Figure (cartoon, rainbow, N blue to C red):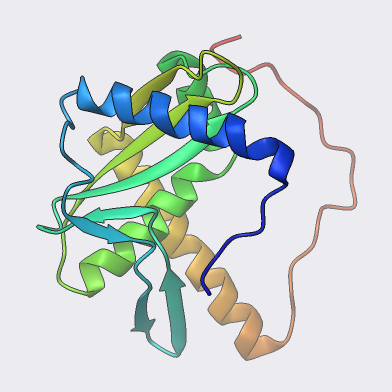
Length: 172
């Protein structure tokens, strides 16, 4: 019971990734983070009429750090991953998870453990700075407001019916 289906041919690779991540964490400022805590602890809370749920990958026993694991096919360089936070919607996830932890009386910090899924399975740690946290919280609040509005009116917003133009981002 409780197993996760995995292709047998992938197990060696998965075990090598796990070992590389363990070595990396042991040599980082988060050494020992996995000694005491809860994996995938389900958090359930209510915001007005909305019931919300989140399952952080790891929450330390003292509830000081919420860690989210992300594997990447490109690279784990922090600068590359930081650009992906907004592109992949991870900022919204951070806001949602932190709303939940706050509703349950916790105020953890947030850290991503990013790992390449090709040898040597390099890792990095990426925290979330206060301005990004503020944006994440606003996005999560806005999403909840949209959901409540759609549920109460029965109208779900779609995409615009006009042409939208791509602009290069600042970092490009």
